[in-house]
Amino acid sequence: MRGKRRTWLGTRWARAAASGVAALGLAGGVQLVSAVPAEAAIGAIQVIAGPLSPTNSEPLKSASANCPPGTQIISGGGWVFVNGRGADADSVVLSQLQPVHSTSGGQDSFVVLGQEMAPGTSSTWWVQAFAVCGQVPGLHVVAGHSALGSQPEQKADALCASSERVLGVGGRIVNPVGKVTLTKVAPLTATTAEVVADEDATGLTSNWQIEAYAVCAPAPAGYQVVANTSSSTANSDPEQVAFVNCPPGTRALGTGAVELSPKPGTGLQVVFPGSPLEVVAVESTPTSLLWGPTLVQGICAT
Image 1: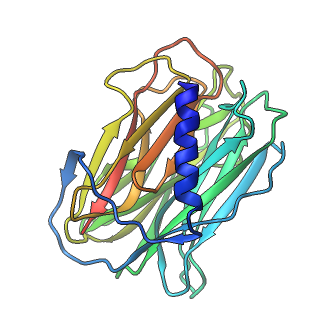
Image 2 (image 1 turned 90 degrees about the vertical axis):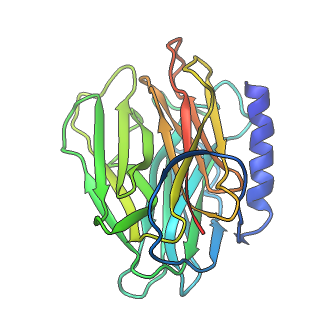
């Protein structure tokens, strides 16, 4: 598995590094999940690769990707990478994937935070953000949050209006401390984005909280959500990788990521809005328990 993972990482890096600003048209075979009536059209879409964060062994790192002036944030993604890909390669995960939409004429962006899971790593690592940008009439970002508490799993939903559709999703762990992982950042329905986070195997005695984000807009033409899984069943692989493309004639607006059966210490490491869309979940703390499979969703439209 780890040898294959290095190949996938190299392929993704080549796709991401090809240009700081890329317009991606996606096509391919998929499993259809849902479809809704068409109501509006979306213009050109660009995927912006933000700069790498500093490379060091600090426990938290952030990165952002900015949309070009005159465009809006539709969705985004990010990934963390541990240099050397040694035994601790999966000890770093994503703890924030957040669309930031300006209501005062400023630049939209997508912000990503990576965190080391306890007990941390002495290896150097970095994080990178990606922004999916375009011009979408009526676009806005809605947030929701879980109740502050110490339960081992928390869920938060962000709701669009019934006449709107979820174009992009995001989530974050508030004040991450290396003990909680994101295990779902995805559309639950056509109008709801859901985020799930889970404590690691040793748990957390203090209260914590998560936030969910939905990028909402009137339903674009050809709106549908497609999905694919890393495997047909749960397993104990240290890394689970899933790919999906939007159907021919449609474009990818957003990416959803779901661990279908998470276990303490598993978490999202990659949500990549490339071609194909890609999600990677990892065991940040090794476990012999069966978990997953991991599901990638493509939010698509014409």
